[in-house]
Length: 319
Image (tube, rainbow, N blue to C red):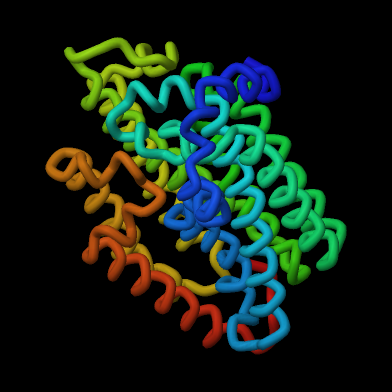
């Protein structure tokens, strides 16, 4: 359903709730809540290019990357606002999402759409202020998210692939902003890792609805737990294989092999959490911050990889 039509449909249903004085006073906070500040950590992928460029200790590239990361925070927040307008009816019937501001009636859909427009334009303006490549990449991300919200999320496997594509665009934008092309090896690894996390989310959703009720989104009916386990096994194996190949033949130094154990542990930890801590995998974007062993693994990998690049690069080089 088009976003404008959805807003007009939902608006009368929420008018009584939106008129409360508490909601009016907290409107900016409600907008920020809907923009999912806790999900902004996923934009850290923008720093992949900086990490592998050898410029991580230089102030200008760091500041530039921070600006791009904030631009992605704005545009990704805009997509959350739009998604919540589109999904308002479905969210109210889901105990996990019924407390969202639009679903519970505290934030009017029209206000959310206006805020989304400002956030998206501000994010693209920040990217344009850096260079045209960053602007094109951020704009491409916005276009992908609009396509996802309206069409792609209703297609089996295409939905999670589109999510993974968003992470790849983040990595590309980070490199483009500082004039460093991120290697195809790392882009593939980024996409596969994001695809793995996307499938874990679908599995958590499949477990949640199994034997209880029919999901409002028809595509979720095509994701059985057994089928998702097979897909997760394939993607996890492929991710590890591609990273090992990168460390052996794609990296600038054989020392990058020292980072492989961190990747092995990280993937195995995710697979463990899928089976034994399904409550964590329903929000894979914040999974790293919720699970301390996985967070320590990711930080250790980043420190090790950054140190290797810094030690083996006399001058800044492509990732």
